[in-house]
Image 1 (spheres, rainbow, N blue to C red):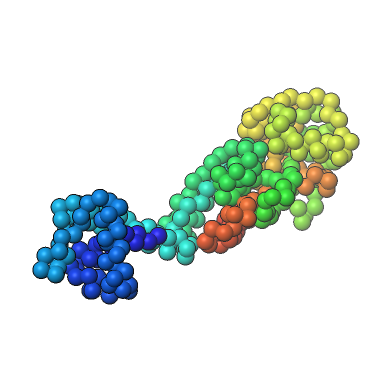
Image 2 (image 1 turned 30 degrees about the vertical axis):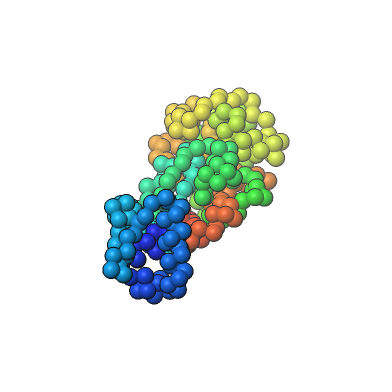
Length: 304
């Protein structure tokens, strides 16, 4: 950003001498004289009066210089911000997060940025997967954090970790006797056929957790006998804690939800991969220091 016209006029006003002004501007005296003359002609007013071989501002010239100095000050401020932005010191990152996941990660990300990127503004948008993917494709977000079932060709993905679907049962349920424990796993295992006679409490169709449950049922040729549909996952887990049925939850959600009398179980899901990812466009990757920011968030969430 360079305000040539304002710089030329202010320099001449400060020196009062066309030769000195030309030297400071690294141009020839005739070139500066011609420039000032053409400018005055275009404006239709005289900015300078020549008194004893000195260029003196007229009244309107003084008003012009007052405004021009304000513009040059703004230019300097912007150039400083631009320099810091190019170095990745300041700027803005627009982050989209699944509304359901937001309570578990937003505060942690803000604390991380305060430590590592204190001058970068963070703008969060909470929404459903469809909306987040649409917003990033329209360049209204810089990155999104969500559980991905199918990768889109126009987005770049950084995998954080697998986000398995877990079966949620009441801790006193007779289903416990049908589980198998592998010491290497965090949760015991159960065969999906062992819950065929249970009441399944599922999210509504169209919700991402329900979508992956349907994929799981299809891949395992499993047909639930009775389903209760509840939109809110906390309500589902609360019902499980009252032994009103069997629910499903993402592992990343389960790790952050404290529910009494609820036990989580692994279930076979080889054909329904679900992964927690950071997704962004190639345009976003051009933001200075962007990949360092992505890696910082990735490390934070990987260790949660």
